[in-house]
Length: 111
Length: 113
Image 1 (tube, rainbow over the protein chains, first blue to last red):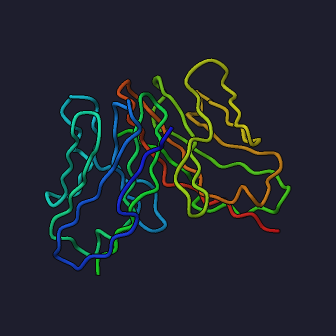
Image 2: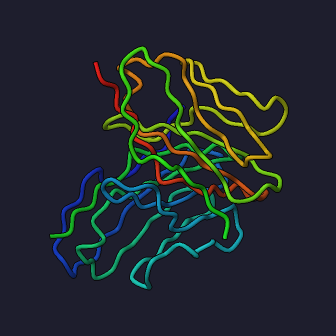
Image 3: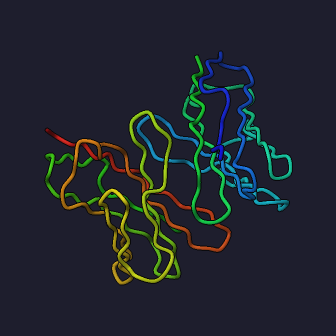
């Protein structure tokens, strides 16, 4: 079946603009994760959705970052007033258990 | 705080030589352990996992990892590497039942011809 998809694959934006990144998880996966991967670094956890429970937002780096998920489907990660340090690959993953399935990521470049 | 340590950011090794990528975690309570791999210009994918049972787990492409509770380690090994193993390898640990993973910083495996 279809894997996790993310859009756009690449996004170049000017400093100060808002961006919205989209993730379509695998159908039936109750858990959804957003991560950030800066160049040459590991995965930085941002936010976790599990079913209808309140999301775990403990990894969001500032109040400029927010995310929503509609039921057990699409999720959007919004970054307001982007800064150059927000430049990174943003990864989405979904799961039903311990194995996480990753999307290809969105490469965000803030100029 | 719970953490995962991958001591080596890069490991260069000659083709057909053995390799070990190290992973240590911070607690000896019940854990579930994973190695994920990220090939160049590709997404992350699961390589192997330990949930219970045999402490030695294997992947389909010849990698193996051993859960060592006393040393809180889950090192990844391969007896003979191939150029196609060039990738970044991430160790991850779950300490609880809500499936969240704590990630290591990754180790780049560089295969020298």
